[in-house]
Length: 133
Picture (tube, rainbow, N blue to C red):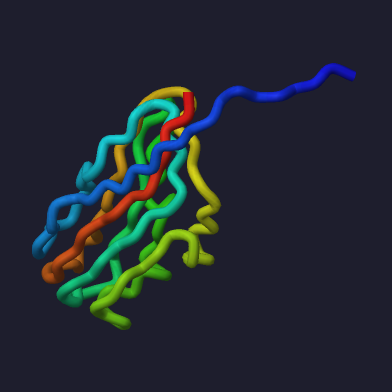
């Protein structure tokens, strides 16, 4: 049986941060650009001022796929109004079931989707990823 050893490896580590999103209106915001061959290891949503409702999702668009607005963090987990100020982590979100994301076909964008009842709050998104060619 032939060996299937890989020489594809990465020794880089990247942590990206969005700007502060202050009192967002409803809609989808493109926050962080990810290159092709990025492997997303984790995503965080920092809430420094509680929102008016629990309607914040963090997801992605790109990679030759349809947009997935809550792929990383789901509003049912990131309770920015109920729980309020704090850090919400994708790898702990049992609603979205996040286990990592590979952008193998094309580049992409990390997005934040805001519901119509969200009229307050201050949010920042962080993404940990590596690039493997």
